[in-house]
Amino acid sequence: MLERDHWLKPFSEPVIEPDLPIIDPHHHLWDRLGGTRYFLDELLLDTTNHNVRQTVFVECNSMYRADATDPLKCVGETEFVRGIAAQSNHGQYGDMRVATGIVGAADLLLGAEVQQVLEAHLAASPETFRGIRYKTAWADETVGLIPGGAKQEGLMNTREFAEGFAMLGRYDMSFDAWLLHPQLEELAALAGKFPDTTIILNHLGGPIGMGRYSENRADVFDEWTRGLASVASHENVVLKVGGIQMPINGFGWHEKDAPPTSDDLVDTNSDWYLTAIELFGPDRCMFESNFPVERQSCSYTALWNQFKKLSGSFSSTERAAMMHDTAMRVYRLDAV
Image 1 (tube, rainbow, N blue to C red):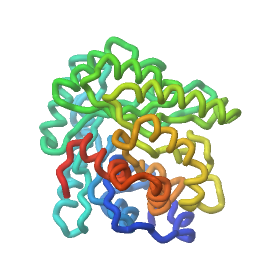
Image 2 (image 1 turned 120 degrees about the vertical axis):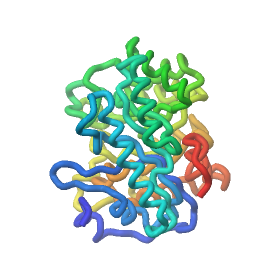
Image 3 (image 1 turned 90 degrees about the vertical axis):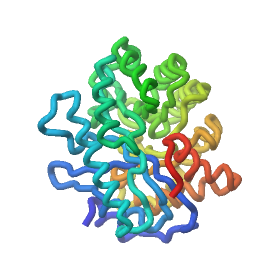
Image 4 (image 1 turned 30 degrees about the vertical axis):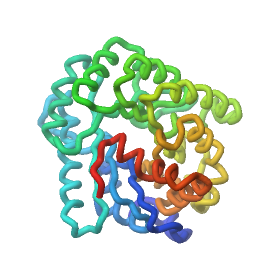
């Protein structure tokens, strides 16, 4: 049984538009100490109801090399994921192709020395390695511990980070940005400094709903909207629409007696999602699952049913962009 199955399964809902093609551009694979495992089998159980054609794996500090020097330990994750992708490509497990794009980890604070890490990732998966995610998420002490977050404020403003970031362009790599909404202006400045590097903003720009940010959600919405508009003004940035069902976002689904339905998710999330889509435009947006992280708050079926309902008023071309085409273009994926 998968984590949270006892909570999710009794309240399952039927999939809508089961033939609509989807690329899921943001999921993880891991085997955590303590028994939480999410490999190909677990991903297949979650995705089975929707027509997910391909996925993009995004780093999650998993399966690092035990015998490498610190900067190169993260390459083990790419090696591991390439193996899962090969298993998926066998065809025995269905038509979905897993991790046709890989986004790995690298310490950009190494500056120009990060070059050796980027080259090692490319050597580990030359056909599918696409870019780097460096976690810069930081918030004040009222929010509490952010799992995998940055150890200090303002990392994107440092000279070392800029030197490391500059190396991405040499290798035609993109940058996945995971941060929180008070840092959006920092990302806008970074995008302006490096207009030729594609930046993929994760999780809708990370609106916070915990700590002092839980006291007035209207103020958070306004602050987030202003920051997101600054980021959206840079054409080299695209947005992942999703990833806001985590506890830090403050909606509290994980604490309820029953998981949300897709209608519940639409009612709660639509203002956030539609504002973001209006700012970026559908051709610079891609829906994401952020599974299995979001599994603590909702089912995969309900999550994508939500996206289908939310996008129902858009044109077929706009829907295809957000469901499939933007991810294919940005991550340079082949058709499946």
